[in-house]
Image (tube, rainbow, N blue to C red; front, side):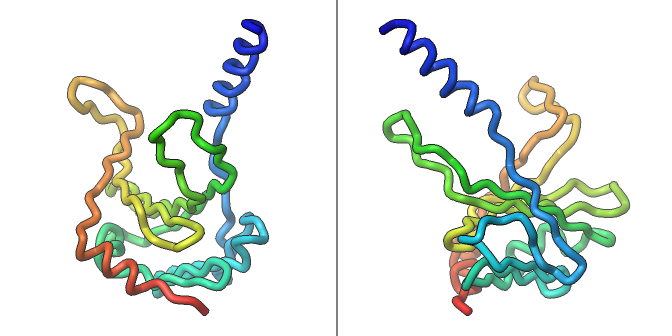
Length: 165
């Protein structure tokens, strides 16, 4: 019995560390390629910041785009995760299926911005400023996800900007 338990712990722990987001390709026509059929078709407009996933779309509100609209010639990259296992620990809220959008400035003088979208609802649930080579409270980080607070007003704007097609 002890051997079975040890094997279970070994395999369940290794799968947690092996998790990586799936890269999603943004084609020149705005199509997003790489999501499962459940979340297709998918597209993103870099000119008016409209994300479409399946039959839903979000016109990303200004309270979110303010984090990156001042960037010089921004580039957008995407990844997603939709294969999370159920949490083993009690009182642990499962992570939703999500898409990560990273916006980078071409001049390299600005920090990248990461916006996380719930793939089911298209709600923005996290915004991070990605800081490189920083020390926070005595701990050095090569990449630090500086989570930004999403105000209640912005949460309401996000909800209003989501619609069905």
